[in-house]
Image 1 (tube, one colour):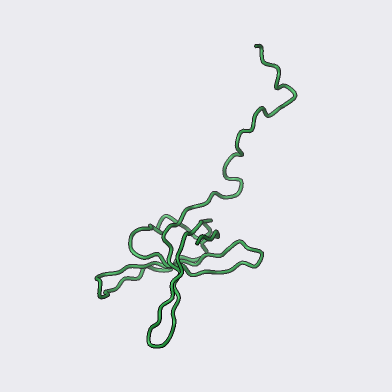
Image 2 (image 1 turned 30 degrees about the vertical axis):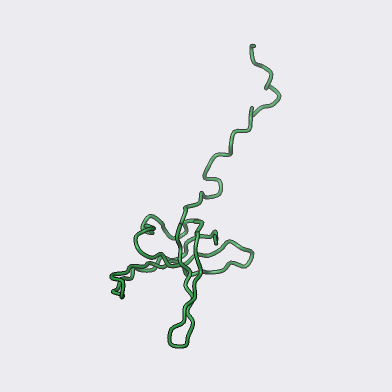
Length: 111
């Protein structure tokens, strides 16, 4: 799955020991740009994604998986990012070149 939005909060890095060794995760809050914006808490596990390169307000596209698990009779759902890509700000890139800017003088070439 994918979602676009802007980062509105970066939470601290958490570490711990599990049955498979040491683990590390960082969560961030993404706000979608929908008509009715949603806030989503997304976790990044391990060192695959370096969240230190992102700042609050950065627009990003996040590819993620949703997974639920049961523990002691209760269900918990995680949103785990496997790719985060920075998106350009609106107007930050020049528009693509689509031919002469002044079509009236398009045929003024000497050949």
